[in-house]
Length: 425
Image 1 (cartoon, one colour):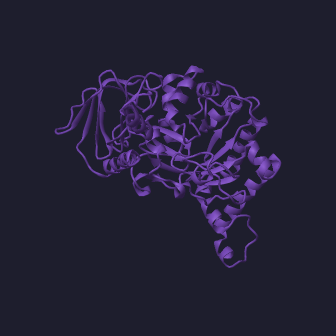
Image 2 (cartoon, rainbow, N blue to C red):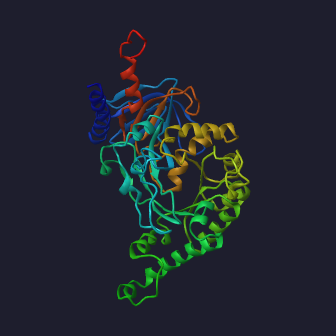
Image 3 (cartoon, rainbow, N blue to C red):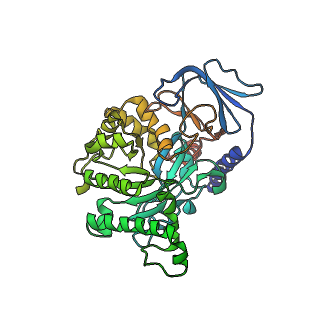
């Protein structure tokens, strides 16, 4: 009986999330907050933010609350844009080591660019409220394997259907040129880069020879039609090519590849990116890293170091911080806090999980608090990067979301059960 009650309670969390995103409520005015604003500007003190119709309507120190607005006194508290985890599998993985609950390990050849991560996304996953309770309001669902792994998606962590939560179903194309992929495919780095170049060359050829391809009169192409079509937005510069590379020399090859095909490049992993920081800064190439991945775990990251994020940020590289995880997405704030501990400027770390990922993927209105921006904001009890701070309110598209999770429901259930004589519940 208790199990059934708990199941109903968990289901109600998702039901309330869905209705909150679907219904149009009154405006919300958050008063007297310390508000993080875009760019290098310092936070606004004692400011008001007005949310209405899913957007940020007004931001300022002397902004009045609209008539009929729900007001929230945030004196002494901090308001940030909702955090964006730029590489995760929230909603795609429930149990990492259970194949039936993990949709990231895709079988098939080394190149599957037509794969869409959004097609495996479960908006009712129990991990979504957990990530949201850590201040994360949006995530990039990224492929994990293969030389060409497919297309990521951006989703907001609210809603009970994919149609409600999806923002971009095809956000970017992913290539993996790390040591593990080298060993699983071509066997050598030069062979791996050759395969990637051939795929891009074939896609470029296909774009100008579709009639011959349809008539079976074109030369042999490495990819099927779906794969060739999936690479067209990359070649046109409409989608970034996100390349996972750790070794400095691999990063340099990725830069040459971007030059040859005029690609919009984003780097991920990038353990040795600090060694080419000046070149990355000159090109303004975004780099997505986990600041806690600082060990020489493989031969392609022998020069990994803990202050990678600080060095890159200090050189002017657009740095994005990520957990690269489903279960750890709730601790994105902790990753940013550790980057600060290791030398990154505090406000730069905040931007690295808000504004920087939005800019890297061309997400207009995300990762910032300014008029017209998407109403994804989080109110914190104090500094978001401190371990003693807690999330107090989360708004996704202007609607407040519940902070209940499977864990809090279990805690409430067992905390209220009477003790037996032997001390058990």
